[in-house]
Image (cartoon, rainbow, N blue to C red; front, side, top):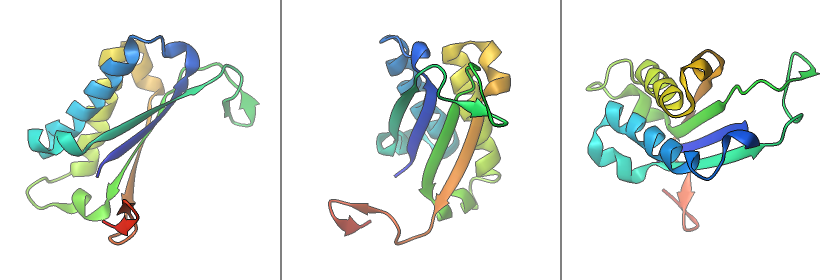
Amino acid sequence: MPHFSVHIREEALDGTVEPKLISALTDAVGEVYGADFRRLVGVDLIGIPQGRRGIGGVPTDQDAPLVTLSMREAAYHVPEIPDAPARLVTAITDAMADVLGEDIRRQTIVTIAGVPEGRTGVAGAIA
């Protein structure tokens, strides 16, 4: 199951942007893997209070969202979807910019994490 964790400044989350981000990130995965894959996507939006992010050892007030997508490693190597990780990085960055504004694009950090088979579980069982 694809899962997003998005760390973003708390001030960016105003009650109206959350559903837009959840939908846009879900759509980004659907762009790469197809519409049927959308139903599997989970999204967590994590607000970071001002002053609790640092870059280079110094606190910063930059908006730089940190987006991590994790799912089974094998999903990144599907022959029918060449360059899946690169396509995901682009689609995710586009989704963030579409919702939060184009000025956020240069600051958006996307990490694609692969989980080896047998290392995820649902309802207490390996999935």
